[in-house]
Length: 157
Image 1 (tube, rainbow, N blue to C red):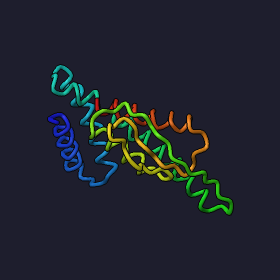
Image 2: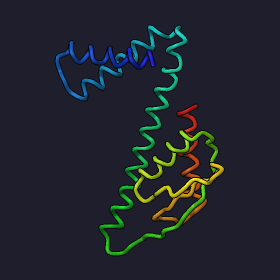
Image 3: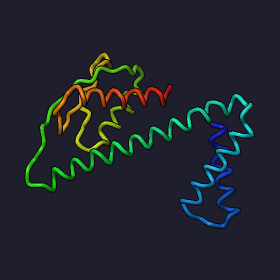
Image 4: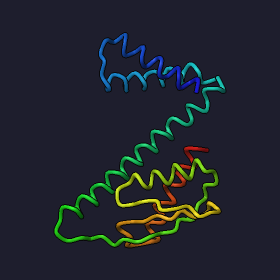
């Protein structure tokens, strides 16, 4: 957390010193301060975890945004066209996640995606039940959810 604090402090200093108060300038400040801290703190073990996790977070966010765009487009197309392509169904996803926090994050990410809704977790926390608007190929959908779960495990691990 110390490295993140330094990153944000340096980014804010960049914004104040440059005199341009915009989101794009803040993003540039975050990237520049990240690079500076990566160079300066490369030998400090407290910074090693931050610099290993930050690229995974960015990768995860981009992956999830792309997933949101795809699912939004699919639901919007179905709503705006006269024919309905919905094939609703419930799928059971066996979980590799063991902790409640990770399961909650996965369940919320699934629910945040249009066309899917987390219904329940089994009492032994080994299966997640999800309702889908478009359940055409159960094995493909299961593989997509397992890929999302693997990214959550990587992010939390």
